[in-house]
Amino acid sequence: MEPSLIKKIIFDYFDDKSTSIQRKMIEEWLIDQGNRDLFHQYLDEWEAQHPQYNFDTELGLATIYKKINASIGEDDAVRIPIKRISFNFIFKWFSVAAVILIFFLIGWRKFSTPSLVGYKNRIDAVRKETGEIYEKENVTTAPILVNLPDRSSVLLQPKSKISYSPKQFNKQTREVILSGEAFFEVQKNSNVPFFVYADGLITKVLGTSFFVKSQAYASEVIVKTGKVAVFMHNDRNKQHKLTDKTLNGLVLQENERVTIDQNEYALTEPLQASKETLQLPIQKLSFDFDEAPAIYILETLKKVYHIQIVYNTARLSKCRLTAHLSDEPLLDKIELICIALEAHYVESDGKTIIESAGCK
Image (tube, rainbow, N blue to C red; front, side, top):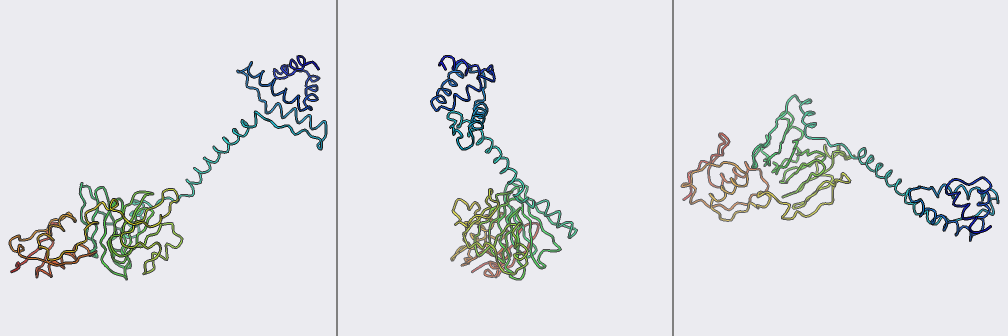
């Protein structure tokens, strides 16, 4: 067959103008490997002349090769590599697969990620169970002190809230619900564990000091002194960890911190707390005083706890104290100081008033 003639027939085929006889001729002609290369050459030339035409070469070649293989038998089937369209074919399928995979991952994340037991849901449940709830919200721009019924101290940060049930608190357990950030100094009592619920994170202590940040999937715990156990609200062993009198789960030591991995919705490995993670003055202060002026100690407490302490400056001017205060709640710290000064204190109108005869 003349090259010019076969070229015209093939171009007619590309234009969808070929007859059944011409298509049969093309099928027989393509059996030769050299003709296949020429076919692709003509295809390139035709596409260059018809850029606006979207010819489905993949479908066309597949139809031709199917007919050829059917006519010459399965054993002698022509294995014709589709050169220039294979990349487009693979790219199309990879694109489709990628889109499907993305939607699958989005759906899996949506349905597999546990829903958070939020602050409002928790306090509503407690209110329904007990008939009452105590809530303290910090609407100021500075931390405020909250003294719990067991004398534990909570330094509640701005835009934060804490709640508990007065009827249930300090019975079998001591449970508080936190939204936002707070620093805790918990009264020691191994028989009545202390729990902080902060969205998906539960913190359990028997008596120590620590910081908790509650922020949806980014909660955090930083331990200042002692030991703290942390676990997720969807933990399979949660009930055992809640009822057991010991610390179990992921137990953090002094100066360790842990966060929630937002992608996995799980606790990260404990890390050492760096200076950058200690945002509050109370976290950095050791409360170790060696022959320090009593007035200096009281002023330090006023500053870190953001409270009013009233005392007679003249009477305490000569008083000096050696005190190693650690994770005691604020009221215990004041009580220890008063014992050393042979003084006593009273709480009145949000103020702590220290009455002392002074020192010689």
